[in-house]
Structures are given as C-alpha cells and as structure tokens.
Image (tube, rainbow, N blue to C red; front, side, top):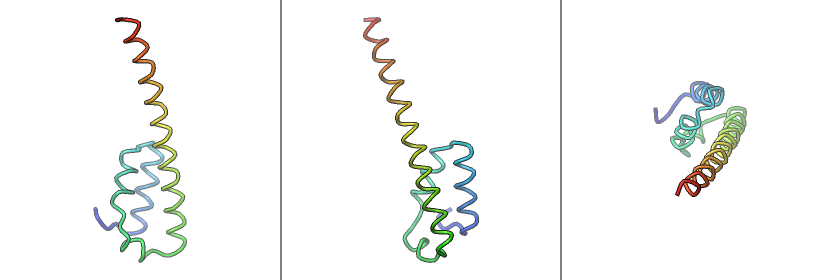
Length: 81
C-alpha cells in the first residue's frame, strides 16, 4: 500500500475519518511519499491537505482525551494510596 491511486488514497482517508480511526489516518499520512505527491493534480492535493488537517485534529482530540483520562487515573491512584 505504498503508492495508492489518488482516488483510493482519498477514499481511504474519508473512510478513516468517518470511522474516527486515527491510527489508520496516521498510517496513510506516514506512507505518503514526496514522489507520490508530485504526481497528484491540484484538486487532489487540496483535498489531501484538508484530510490531513482533519486527521491532525482527530489526533489532537484523542490526545486531549487521553490526557484527561491519565489525570483522572492519577487522582484515583493518589486517593487509593
């Protein structure tokens, strides 16, 4: 899955974002290559840019949720000790 066709790449991003699957979105971003990007048309690049931005927001949201859960767990641990 190193060089996906533009339509497949965009569809894969859409599916990952609809499912709120940050791991899949991250994998798609990680697997993008400069060579692959150089062969995409402007509309596809703009769509990809937006989906990457949405993926980053999803990752930030999950990070914030995890930080809250960690803080709660630490409070509970402190209370129990």
